[in-house]
Image 1 (cartoon, helix red, strand yellow):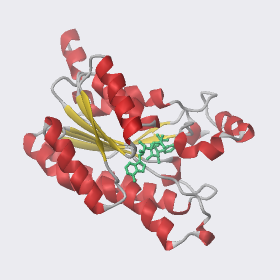
Image 2 (cartoon, rainbow, N blue to C red):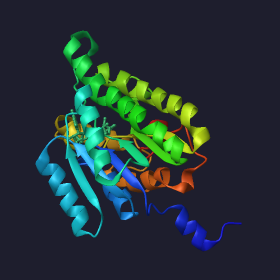
Image 3 (tube, rainbow, N blue to C red):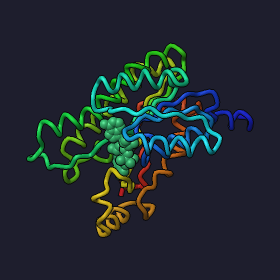
Image 4 (cartoon, helix red, strand yellow):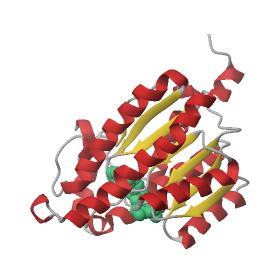
Length: 259
Ligand SMILES: NC(=O)c1ccc[n+]([C@@H]2O[C@H](COP(=O)([O-])OP(=O)(O)OC[C@H]3O[C@@H](n4cnc5c(N)ncnc54)[C@H](O)[C@@H]3O)[C@@H](O)[C@H]2O)c1
C-alpha cells in the first residue's frame, strides 16, 4: 500500500534540475512553468532573449528558481554551447525536455534540401545531441527523465507532413532507443504527443477560424489543446511517479488520435 506522504513525494521535483528547450513559448513554456512550480530548478533554452527573459521573470516572481540560455539549436555548435552553458547554471539536468521545434510546411514535392536540413537540425539532431550529452550522466547518477514533444504527424500522414512528420517519427524512434539504452539505470525516455494547440508555431493555421473549429471537432473532448494541458503529464513524466513508464508515446490530444 502507498502511504499519503509518500504519494505526494512521488510527484515532487524538489532538488531536481530541468533543461527545457523551447521553454520560452507555447507548450515548452507551460512545461517549464509546471516543472518549476513542482520544485525543479529550470533552465529554459531557446531563441529570442525577450521571450526567454519574460518566461524566467514570470517564474522567479512566482518564487521559482529558473534561468535562461539563448541559443540557436539549429546548429550542432549552438546545441553544444547551449548544453554547456545550461549545465553551468545548476549542474547537469536530471530532466531533459525537448520542446523546441519548427514546422516549415512545403508539400513533399516542393521540399528543398535546406528545409529538410533545417527541420532535422532543430527537431531531431538537437534532441539527439542533448540526449548524448546528458543521458549517460543521468544513468550514472541513477535518475533521469527525457521527454520529447512529437506530433500526430509522427504517427500518420497529414497534409504537408513533409520533413516535419519525418522528423517527429524519428524522434519517437529516438525515444525508444534511448529508453532501451538507459532505462535499466533509472532513466526513462518518453514522448508527449500533442493534438492541435494554438501557438506561434502554427500561427497561419490558427488564423483560419474554420480550420480551428474543424480541428476541435476532431477531438473527443470538444476543444483544441492549450499549452497548460501538458503541465500534469510533464510533471508525472519528470517525477518518480513515472518510474515504470518508458519508451512510450503519451498522447495529450483530447482524443484527437482515436476519433
Ligand atoms: N502547437 C501545436 O499544435 C503542436 C502540435 C504538435 C507538436 N507540436 C510540437 O510541440 C513543440 C512546441 O511547439 P509550440 O507549439 O509550443 O511552438 P512555439 O513556436 O510556441 O515554441 C517553439 C519554441 O522553440 C524554440 N525554437 C525554435 N527554433 C529554435 C532554434 N533554432 N533554436 C532554439 N530554439 C528554437 C522557440 O524559441 C520557442 O521557444 C514543437 O516541437 C512542436 O513541433 C506542437
